[in-house]
Length: 295
Length: 322
Image (cartoon, rainbow over all chains, first blue to last red; front, side, top):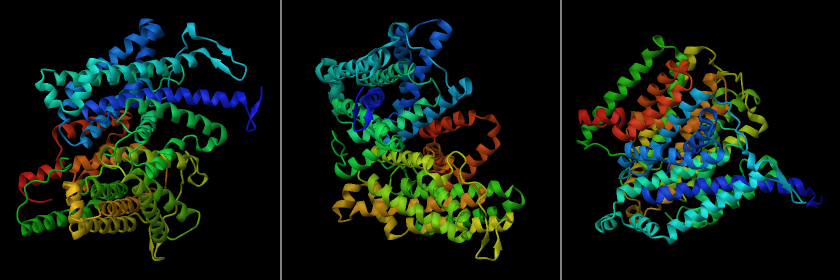
């Protein structure tokens, strides 16, 4: 045990760890938002609700079908992603040509519907979800205690983020995607089915949110309002990072998680507002965001 | 960028003036008769929200800026007014003025930050700033946290009119809301308002014509925040309560809903929308969480099939401006 700036190392690194965990979710969620915005020109307000659906799907699969965490980790993103594809076909495809504002309002409405339905059936108190057996316990690193599950969340979300970055920036399909973001008409003229690509992209982004939800389930309680609480923070993260760059979204997400964690140690009263304050400062100094182009 | 509100094809201005005057007289007549038929507190609540929606509409309908954080001004003005009236013992007119001024100051700060980005980012920034101030309200000692500020005295207006009397209060609210309504109308139809509409239609063009669009947007934002503040301050007196619900993001969503249902960028739309949504929430209150689902469904329906809103559709049907 030792102290840093008069704070015991356990407390400091413990909060730093929580910051990194929150940062993983910010990164995963803002990544999904950025991917969806790039392709669909829609800010997906439903993203938080879809994250919540991911957590609930994992909980329900365990309760009623006995499917464990690892199975949920595969099945839930597919299930919720499929529901996203349905949403895109039923609603979003009709607003793509309208002003951005309508996409935001539409997805806001959908988020209300989803949250309201879940509150009706599950109340707002929240349900616990067990950490999977394989990841119970933790390691004492000397300066802090590291629970295995938290280490897994940070490592795995980093891997997911990097794989997504690789898929978009370094593969052939990713190059189609980026081309279609720039000029969909021209890409269609080359015989690529852009509308289908748009639908799949939305499904993928929603799947990412659901994956984050499954990972979040053992850490936070599974509750209907978990999505709306996090989505507004993620919006601030997106404003800070700008949506132009995938890596930017990842770095900003983790970075802000850490800042939030540190604030909890040194100035706990401000921990729930610090990300918004950072946003205000970034807007003053670099209005385009850290990684963004103005627009 | 396509305009957010597509105004219907406009006939000559003389007709406009006539249709607007007729609609205004009808509205005032209904509001004068209403308290003898309907529960006055419900009407006062709806009136406050009508003013709130008009303030919001000034920004989204005429400048094309969608704020998703207007609860910030509404809720904080409500807190400030309640605090001034209860703890400082200010008379109602001073308390309302104080709350409204608070809304204006917050609007200046938030607007200064938010107009630095356009379009979709503007909505996200306003939402995030409002959430920040929600957390501040949750923590600040004077707001009373989860309890809010309760038992706010209505007091005597100018030391003469006893506002604890329901009808006197109603008259006061009606006059204030109508004044706010006429003020927004005046702003929209002033040379300043014409510049705002030009910014909405084509901002780069307005810039190239020599307008400093940022300043116009900021002034519009502050005006909108001030009126939202007035609405919030009045609401605090009506319910004798300022609480966290009024600064929460759901409140920002509700004002979007009211304006969208009534008709973005129409003069009377926000009023119609506010009465409709408040009525819906009052009568469906026993359904609990279903209200959220219904609200969400209305959002989806309006965006997909009813973008002009009730008044917008009516105006298109009658080929007049409303």
